[in-house]
Amino acid sequence: MLSALHPEKIKNVIALATPGDFSLDNSLVALWTKSIDPDTIVDTFGNVPGAFINSPFLLRSPIDYLHKYPHFFFERTEPIDFESAVEFFATEMWLYDSPPVIGEIYRQFVKDCYQKNLLIGNQMIISGSRNNTPIDLTEIKIPFLQIIASKDDLVAPASSRALNDVIGSPDKSIIEFNSGHVGACIGRRAHKELWPEYTYSN
View (cartoon, rainbow, N blue to C red):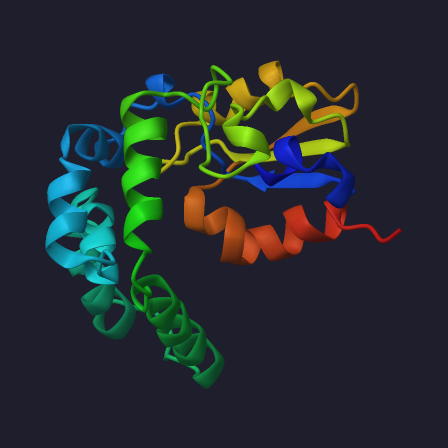
């Protein structure tokens, strides 16, 4: 959005597991978000609690959520080493230590993106931006890289791919990594295979 509104401020864009066409996302989280009433949530809480945001993530696979702790502590074939324990708890803290989401941002994001799908159609307006003109993704002319997790169950890969069809840059590409959403960010394979291969410096 910032790149479309202020292209002079951005040199290039790397989008990691980023939704684009919300009509193509029928994951549990997407269906849940499309059906809620954001006005009631924001009017009740003000800023939306992090625990509320996390709840649909946990509902994706409650059995796996309940099973990962006994699996880590009691079903291992090798002893738990200090590095593995630190990594496990650091990941758990990162996953669930979610700050509140600013209420009005949440309200607009849910309505305009999930429920009306305005962004991909170049119809979304952020109040106060360029005389309230719609965000036009075709205005993004800078290099654009999309990294997609092929097994993502938080953001449908098809939703991410759709961004590249709309972005106006002649220099745009897609990398698909065989992992889930979180795995593409912090998974061991991502650090060994994805980031070293595609990291570069200018």
